[in-house]
Length: 86
Image 1 (tube, rainbow, N blue to C red):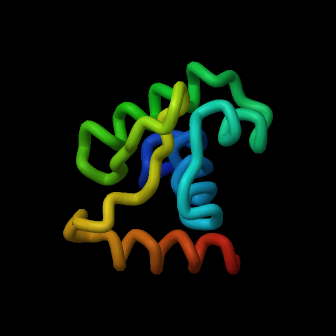
Image 2: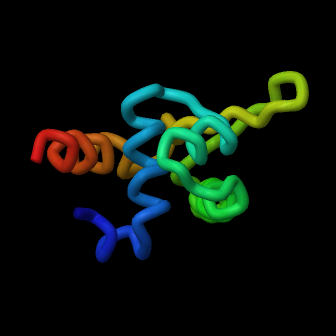
């Protein structure tokens, strides 16, 4: 649904996952949608480099979440919630 806006379906699914679960790591997101982990990792890296996501290392796992300091976070969350409801 938001593929045209975000550039690809993987990006859309990553953001929807993080909205729903608050945090996530590449393997869990990939498994949830049946994607290759590398495909998900590319999007996580892209979104983090753009400031949309932040991550922290917990043991050997890197956890991602929406960046609470990103200026457009409330608008992004509203858009994603609307997409989930549609």
